[in-house]
Structures are given as C-alpha cells and as structure tokens.
Image 1 (tube, rainbow, N blue to C red):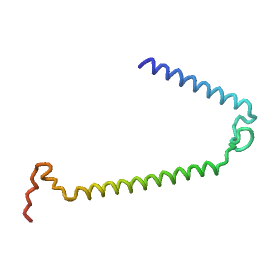
Image 2 (tube, rainbow, N blue to C red):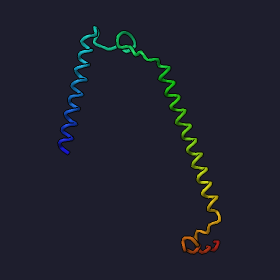
Image 3 (spheres, rainbow, N blue to C red):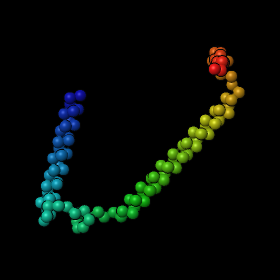
Image 4 (spheres, rainbow, N blue to C red):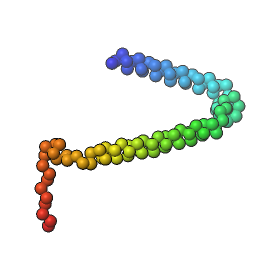
Length: 104
C-alpha cells in the first residue's frame, strides 16, 4: 500500500512540475505574460455551436432514456400486478389475515 501511495505521490509531483514548467514557458513567450484564448496562437478553434449541439443532443438522449425507462418500469409493474391479482398471498405465505379492528 505504501508503494502505491509513494508511486502516486511521485507521479502527481511530476505532473505538477510539468504543468508548472509549461505555464512558465508560455508566460515567458507572451509579451504581457497572459494567455488570450480568444485571439492569436492559443485561440479556441473549435466551433462553439458544435459543442452546444452535442450537449443538446446528449441532454435530449438522456431525457428520452429516462422517459423510456420509467414507461418500461410501469409496464413491467402493471404486468406483474395483472399476473398476481388473483393470488391469495396469505395462503401462499402460510399466514392469516390481520383481525379487523373495531371502529372507535
């Protein structure tokens, strides 16, 4: 267990060191020391409408799956209720029904 934790710590330290080195290198290359992701070399090139479209499609698919799952669950439950509506569960389980209580 200690070896695993030591290895994870070592990998995390290396990752942080690499990211810090990359950040410092990028900062040194830019005149103001800040990265602008809207213009220039580091601009975000992908069309944002594609990203939005994928998110919308994913949301619609998730909602459709939720609706279909709930409908399927309802149909299965209704089928089980229809199949067992004439079963006397007290007789199957070998118990007696509770005694009726007098009205107060």
